[in-house]
Amino acid sequence: MIYKRSSQLFKAAEKVIPGGVNSPVRAFKAVGGTPIFVQEAKGAYLYDEDGNKLIDYINSWGPMVLGHAYPPVVTAVINKAKKGTSFGMPTHIETEIAALAVAMVPNIDKIRFVNSGTEACMSAVRLARGFTKKDKIIKFAGCYHGHSDSFLIQAGSGASTFGTPNSPGVTSGTAKDTLLARYNDLENVKRIVEANLNEIACVIIEPVAGNMGCIPPKKGFLEGLRILCDTHNILLVFDEVMTGFRLAKGGVQELLGINADIVCFGKVIGGGLPVGAFAAREEIMNYLAPLGPVYQAGTLSGNPLAMAAGLAMLKALNEDAGVFQRLADKTAYLHKGLSKVLENKKITHTINRVGSMISVHFTEEAVVDFESSAKGNNETFKAFFHGMLNNGIYIAPSAFETWFITDALSYADLDETIAACDKVFA
Ligand SMILES: *Cc1c(COP(=O)(O)O)cnc(C)c1O
Image 1 (tube, rainbow, N blue to C red):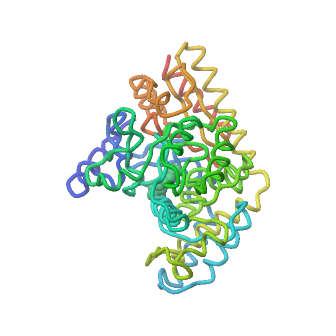
Image 2 (image 1 turned 90 degrees about the vertical axis):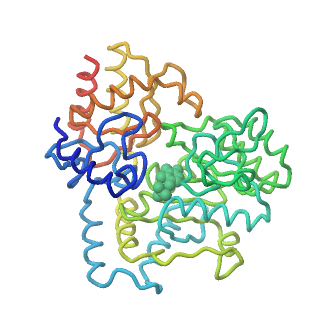
């Protein structure tokens, strides 16, 4: 495939945008080459500026679970836009989407809308701290909760459980309140809790991890966290920005039958427009301004275009009894097809999958946490990425990213994808 125009557009972008992109993973740093500039997208396909057609497995990193330019969402946004695009005053559509979200998701009474997943997680942690009157939080290595300071933390040196900043600009003062634990290792979390008794406000986790590849929680891990949190008056925060309205109507809480105290949303909930949200039972949510003391606000929060897109998306998912099973079936089919090809070619691999999230790791070890995910062979991944791209298949440009399956994909698309994999490793 030819990427002449994308290369030119990227050069122009680099002059006025740092690195030519508005979010780093788009820059192809992990795989090399030039990012592809999109002209338009419809259903399962991207059409780029050079006229290439690609089958899309990223889907805007998750939101487009029903495919690009999904007609009910497009119509809702167009109709809303004609009536004004922002007021900074309440609108009824905010209540409509809030009521629908509360009805779809278990264990939440109230929800507040923000503009991104980052904002949702940042606000959820502030709320947890305000509610429990404690400062420290536990997060897991390899989990991503957006780019607010408290989350840009890596493991500290030696035996220390304190984190250190992993970006300049994050202060050591902030870092000392974020404790880093190992995913799927309950004993590790217990030790951290015991070393910081009565100091931990919340444990925040991707209940099915998606930002170090797709990693399911081991049996008993989330259940154990729930008990640990209850024992120590710690709030359990599920970051369902990726999994919410994707793995089930009610996200992982419903899928695995485990209740969180605060739940964060983003991606699908906005139907492709910038939306995030966080939700909890009434007692916790009433701690937020203007009812309670914890401050949180947003000029464009609950924006009518964003709410119209989100409402159309949630309605579509709510009214389609078969959608989550269909998504899981398509993903399982892809998993089986890719496994068979990679086995035939004797390529060392592990494929992880939960519902419509799937990731291919070029390692023979089980991928259960950040360390095991990082053992994947990145040279093989690069070759895989570019090989798939040359065959018209757009997968995530990093081995640490999950692929997001959309219901717009046909079985013919999946067969084409599996055939492409066969050609790549010919
Ligand atoms: C994408 C993501 C975020 C951040 O959301 P943004 O909208 O990019 O700010 C937070 N948590 C998880 C689990 C995510 O996948």
